[in-house]
Amino acid sequence: MAQTATDTVAEVLALTCSEPLGEVTHWTGRALAQAVGISLRSVQCIWDAHHLQPL
Image 1 (cartoon, rainbow, N blue to C red):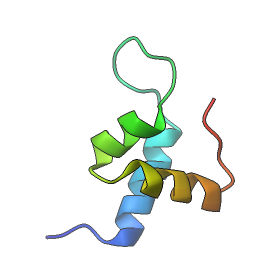
Image 2: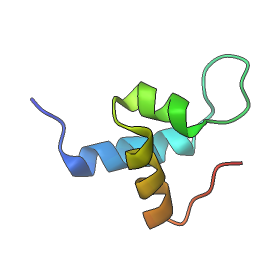
Image 3: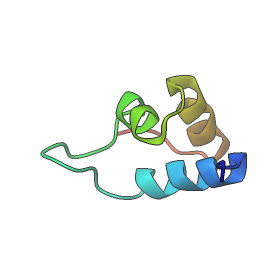
Image 4: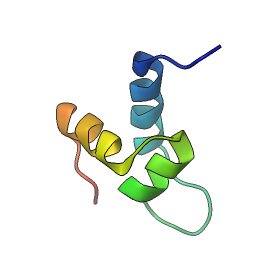
């Protein structure tokens, strides 16, 4: 079953609030985009809409 836009937003928000795998300390927009399978710009739009800023 295909993921809806709401599911994608929820996944981005959940990952943003979790610690990334490996030795990195925070998610970058590019890493998050790759993990979810969307564009960097989409991640940036979701972060902006929810008043989130990368560290």
